[in-house]
Length: 120
Image 1 (cartoon, rainbow, N blue to C red):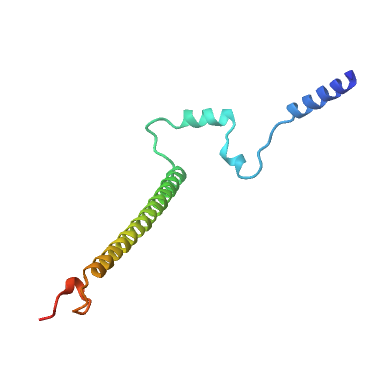
Image 2 (image 1 turned 135 degrees about the horizontal axis):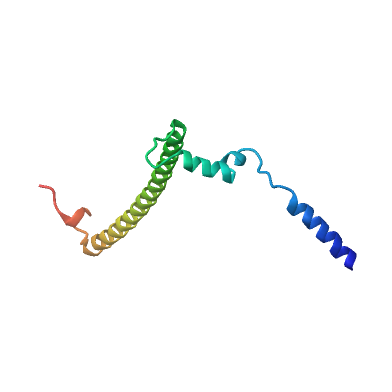
């Protein structure tokens, strides 16, 4: 049993000792600690941003605006569908009640016009 613990401990030290490298584009996102501290030392609060930083921030703002626009468009479409459905249901109820009223009040002497009006 002790040899399995020893081998697991050896493998664990090898795995933990091996440096972790990020693949592809993620490697560009994360900076080393020294580079990050140099970045903040180099760039003071009043320093102007580089064009790359301005472009990156602008892309983020545009992406957020697009997501917000799509969200509100989807909500508006949902509300329009709901309002149209409610209107259709109300029209159907009104039509049914009007037909019942006409049927009840029709006396058979005149053609079944609305409210039994005669054309002049």
